[in-house]
Image 1 (cartoon, rainbow, N blue to C red):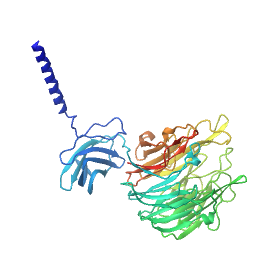
Image 2 (cartoon, rainbow, N blue to C red):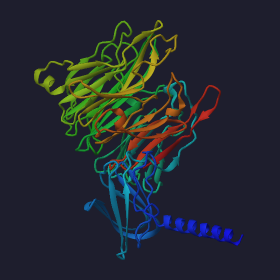
Image 3 (cartoon, helix red, strand yellow):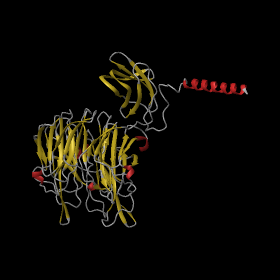
Image 4 (tube, rainbow, N blue to C red):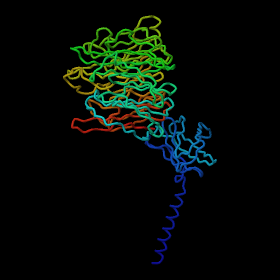
Length: 572
C-alpha cells in the first residue's frame, strides 16, 4: 500500500508546481489588459514598475485619471502612444491621484509615466475602453424643497448650474433663491448667498460667468427680478431690477429669464413676466436689455413700451453685432405678435428685421417660440422652433442684404397628428448649434384637446433631431424622457432628463452625454449615461470637458411617494 501514498504525494507535488508556474505567467502581473466588453466599466490595470505604484487608470471624456497606491510628491506625468510622447503635464503637488488631459482613441494602448520630485518614477500601460467611464465624485446637498407633481413638468423643482471658464468653480442657483460658489476639485463651498428671502416660488433663473471668469451674473425670478453682478469673492458689484417695469405679484413674478454675454463682456438679458389669463386672453409682459460690463444700460427693446408677448430666451454673436430672440404666448397677442423672430443690432438695440411664423391650423390659432432661437457665431444663419413641433432656419446675412425676411427651410418634426380622434403633438423646446450641426430637442407629448390626455407618445416626442445647414437629417435619438436645457461645449452635448408624462418610465431620469465629434448615427455618439432616482432638471459640463454637474430634484407620485432628493451630482 506504501506505493499508493507515494503516487498521491507525487500528484500533489506536480499540482503545486503547475500552480506556481501558472502564477508566473503573463496574465498575473501584466501592465495592461485587453479592452473589456463592458465599455462603461472602469479600466483596471496591474502593478506598475518599482518607484511609484499606480493602482488604476480610468479614461474619461477629456483624458485619464491615475490613482496611486500612496500619496507622493508628483512632479510630472507623461503619456505615450507606442513610443511617442503625446502629452505631458506638470503637477508640483502631493497627491494620491492625478488627472492628465489628452485625446485618446478607443481600444488603443497607452503608457503612463508618473515622476516624483525626487526623481522616482512608475509606469503603467492600459487599453482605452470603447467608451469613457462616468464616475460620481461627490454630491452637494441642497435645501429642503416641496417635491413637484411628477405628472406635470410645469411643477418641477428647478435650479441652475454653471462652471467657470477655467473649470475651477461651479455656481449653483436653487429653487429657493440661494446662490452657492463651489470649488470643483474638492466640493468646498467658497461662499453662499440667499438672494431671495421668504417668498415662495422665487428662484434663481439663470447664471453666466464673464469670459475671464472674474465676474458672475445671476438672474432671478422674484418680485424684484434682479440681475446681479458678483465678483468671485461674492461681493455685489451692481444689480438691476426689472420688477418695477414689468410689475409683480406673488403669483405672477417677473424673471431675468436668460443671460448672454459677448466677447467684450456686454450683457444681453431676456426679462419676462407671465401674467396669466385675463378673460380669454393669456397676458405676458416682456423686454430685452443690454448692459455694459459695469452695469450701465446700453439699450432696451422696445425702447418706450413693453411687449405683450413673453421672451424666455436670447442669443448674441460673440462680436456683439447681433442679438436675437423669439416671442411666445398661449393665445394670439395684439401688438407684439407671438411666434415672431426678432434680430437686433447688438450695439444699438435697433431692429434689423422680424418674421412672424404663422400657426398650424386648424390645431392652433397661435404660435409660440420658447427656448430655441440661436444664431451662428459668424451671424450668417439663425435657427428657431415653434412649440407645435416645427424647426426653422433663416439666412440672416441674405435677409440683411435683401431686406426681405424669409424662411430658408422648415422641418415638421413633431407637428400635430390625430390618434383615436385626439390631436397630439410633441412640444418643441430647445435648439442648439454644435459646430456645424443643428440639434432640435422635442419634449413631452401633449393633447391639443385639453379634456383628454394623449393616448400615447407622438412618434417624435422626447427625441433629438440633428440636421446640417441644408436641412438634411444627420441622426436622431429617442431620449425617452423630458429633456431640459442641454449643456454644450465644442464637442459634447449633455442632456438632463426628467419625467416621461405618457410612458411614466422612471428609469430614464439622469444625464445623457453625446459626443458630437464622432461619426455615424446617434448610438455611436451616445457615450455616457448616469441615472438619478429623482428627475434631473439641469446640467452643465466644464469647459475642459472633465466635469459634469447634474441637478437632481425630487418628485411626488400619485400615492405620495417621493422620488429622489434635491442635490447636485459632480461626475467625471
